Amino acid sequence: MVVKTASVSYAHELMPEALEQALASGEVLASFAPHLTHLLDDAPVPVVVMAVEEAASHTHLPPKQVWRNVAKLAGSLSVHRRTLWV
Figure 1 (cartoon, rainbow, N blue to C red):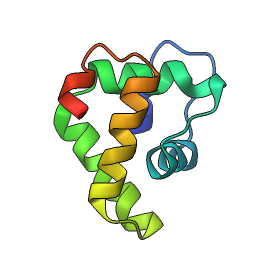
Figure 2: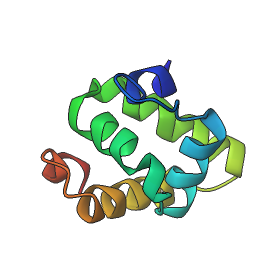
Figure 3: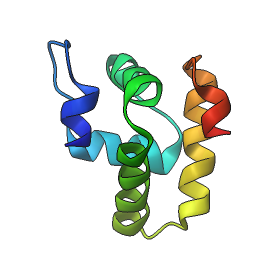
């Protein structure tokens, strides 16, 4: 569901693995930057929370670290709602 939300209106769909990698690393491929920007700007907060929880679980990272990566992504992508993710 999260990747569908992030992929609306884009020619290429964001794959779950790419989203998980971005959340786990705090870095995103340029080709998926618009998807992550859309997700962090427009997706309902519970959807992002679910994505963070799943990424933390699948990558065996503490959720706090994944949240730091979300904040990093929000800043680097100039997300309008970046203060929400800090």
